[in-house]
Length: 173
Image 1 (cartoon, one colour):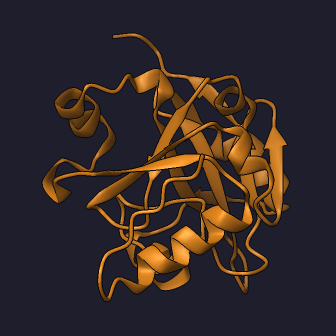
Image 2 (image 1 turned 45 degrees about the vertical axis):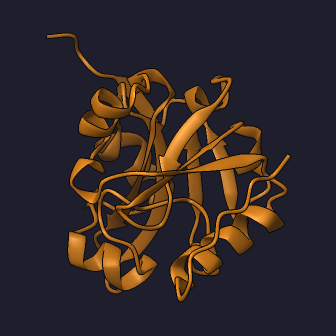
């Protein structure tokens, strides 16, 4: 069952909710304090596990013009920018997109970036580990909300590719 939560005059929410609906995703919108939107702070405060939390990260291939893709990885992993992302972008160098580029391309700020409602044509690469989760929590389009869903809801998004090895486990401290 899809749960729709709509706020007055919230164009971004409408845009994200439309994309969730088109993807036929069963989801729940979780409101959060914008100061606690970063993954670790959010999980610690609201009681979600890091291994069910995913980050949507815009990556950039160095070139003229630069190329971009959105990557979704679990919070317990780190994206393989130097090998997998660079090769998939077909560039000699790749990096995380700047916060300014992320806002310009997606309309979303860090801590709220979601794979839902991305610009047309932007590749969406999802690490295969995300798909192994029973449920996953991702950004909700702003720092004041998250989306909790079955990861199968990600498969129907435009330009989606499940990528084995997109991320590597984070070394334990």
